[in-house]
Image 1 (tube, rainbow, N blue to C red):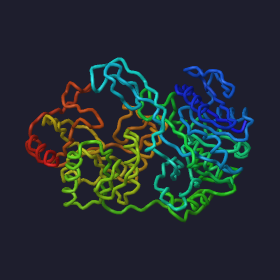
Image 2 (image 1 turned 30 degrees about the vertical axis):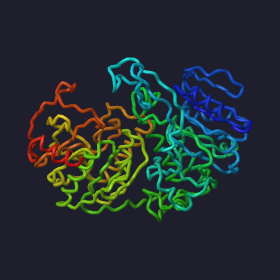
Image 3 (image 1 turned 45 degrees about the vertical axis):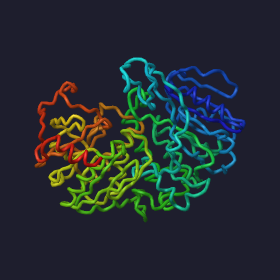
Image 4 (image 1 turned 90 degrees about the horizontal axis):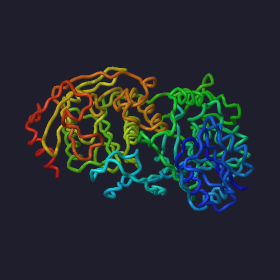
Amino acid sequence: MDLSVLIPARNEMFLKKTIENILENIEGDTEVIAVCDGQWADPEIPDHPRVTLIYHNEPSGQRAATNEAARISRAKYIMKVDAHCAFDQGFDVKLMADCEPDWTVIPRMYNLHAFDWVCDKCGDRRYQSPTPTSCKKCDNTEHFTRDIIWKPRLSRRTDFARFDKEMHFQYWGGYEKRPEAVGDISDVMCHVGAGWFMPRARYWELGGMDEEHGSWGQMGVEVSCKSWLSGGRQVVNKKTWFAHMFRTQGGDFGFPYPQSGRQVEHARRYSRKLWVKGEWPSAKRDLNWLLEKFSPVPDWPEGESKKDNSIVVASKESKPGATLVYYSDNHPDANILDACKNSVLKCMEQYGYPIISVTHKPVDFGQNIVVDFERSVLSMYKQILIGLETAETEYIFQIEHDLLYHPSHFSYIPENGSYYFDRNLWRLDVDTGKAVFYQADVPSMMCAKRSLLIEHYKLKVDYITEHGHTSSLGFSPPKGIPKEMRIGKAKTYVSEYPCIDLRHDKTFTRRRMSLEQFRNKPQDWKEADVIPGWGQTKDIVRQYIQSNV
């Protein structure tokens, strides 16, 4: 064979579809070697002369499974892919046509639109998600069909990535604006680990996958560092592509088997030991060389120096004062978005804090950063992290796109080591004019030190990328990750006058405006048609929302 496509798979419902898509699109002498790691494939994989299946009663882990498949291969090249991917026509011959003996090649990556849920009663379609419990357009609560789409989302493309000072994978869309990123074959610092290609002999020269990391985690960082620090090269081939399905919504559309937070953290510590401390024995270059090659690299200041076998990193100095980090998916109606922004701008006439907005669509609001993300909990956290890393002040206020902010909210400056939540918040239904009050800690009413928030959101983004989000983890810092990973404490304050959370039909969370909608009833529940400091609710809707139509 010219190429062996290696697929480590455990409890992967789309393994059959992935293999079928590979066979449909290969044009060379290419085979598939799939490892069913602890469970038989379901649905079953039909016999095919180009497909080899390996089955284990007990799971060995992604790295061990990849090594086992590579040992069986006798092909000139190998390509490791996840078991939920789609492929370009002729991807195999395109990759083989542009690969030198010491290269690792990453095809251009798109997000995979794998399926839609279709309501059997009214035909309403819902983009891939956990199994629906109800239809948004009719009263169906039982019958839904999974309609397989299996196409790349061309608006969700990844060519370039990096890792940060903790050796955590990070997307790097800004790199493509550099001159060195132009061309069909371009150097790439890191990749997510879902799909990569290299000569089989090269794979074993690099030591295969290092199983000391544990069963899972840091694969993209490992392959990338080995590729570069061995004296070789890693590139993205934009002439071809694969599409990867990201499972970030939890439930039965999250990670397909349990993951231990301790095991994941072990993989990260071991990764830092190899690359930051320079303990990989086959290295011909050190990490400073790689940082200088791609310099400037976010999170890595220029001019790193090596001392006592570890990299010394000078952290970005924070300026006094606060920055407002605004994040939006641009989903609410324009009049609500404008009302929120106008309320913030009015507050800043008093304080003058800088604003950094991270949005899905361009907005004229402070320093605007536009991201190409899907609307999800994970994308929200990534947007916040981008804003935090861009800011330069010591403190941060997080602000959202559907709140009316009062100047008194921004008068509080927190202490170190804690997240401070302003609990003076009313919820206002923009359709009915009903207003309710109950105390809760919400991210849009929080301020804290920037350094603490960056550390928290890095942990959160990494965890949810690998495990998916579940509502049981919570949303507000320090929640959102398992208890053993949390840092800092939540504290509260009450501003002189409240802010107003506008509840509407496009809110990211449920519009709960009555006690009956709560499993655990708030003890301090209030209902009113007047909000202190703002006036009658009907006047608020008229003045701040309807006036922006």
